Length: 289
Image (cartoon, rainbow, N blue to C red; front, side, top):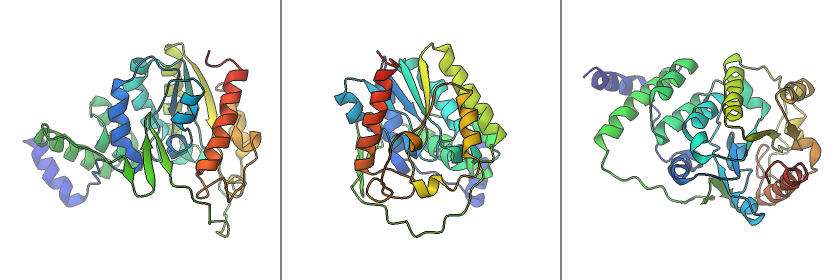
């Protein structure tokens, strides 16, 4: 009864429930429940689920799953690893670490996960950690929605506009070129959110306890966007203290127009170049035998 009235109150305040939302999160989190004993698990934000093409890695002989989600911050990564890491049992975790994610509150990704995954005590702790009334209201609504619609199957189309869901969690966007080159590029200081840093460290601890390897990867963004970070070298030094860290913005040369579809995300051409280089790094360093 308390939950019911809180839902009614929440509707008046505002919720943002969106099952089958951006990035095929529902389909991805449904699929992962059937996976185990894989070679590589990817985690991170849209740079992960749009940047690591599971087909390319499978063609190289790896079994993989991409656990990225839209704007996924380390608070959500920690929760997803708690839920699925010991189940999928990867040999290697590739953890995407875009600097901007460390500065975010994590509200958007929290709502995405709440709307599209099972909800448990970890969901409640997440809502209190990010201190978002919108996320709290959405969680309340979702509890009631799941009770009422328990026997109703939800199906998410694998094709949405220009996006296609690929088995294993990757989302492929129809080939387009970046047209944002003339936008103003203001300087961006990487101001680390302490809650995000704590969850990042917790996530690494979870991985360490499974004895699987982990590498930290800064996936490519356009050079114009990369150059807006004021303290990128300090960030890189910090990441290197946590383990093997690869900034692919310095490892691979890409074209801001023909290898990206916007200022942040690789297009099909850029993904192929990036993934082939990453696979080379994995093989050369024996990260996943």
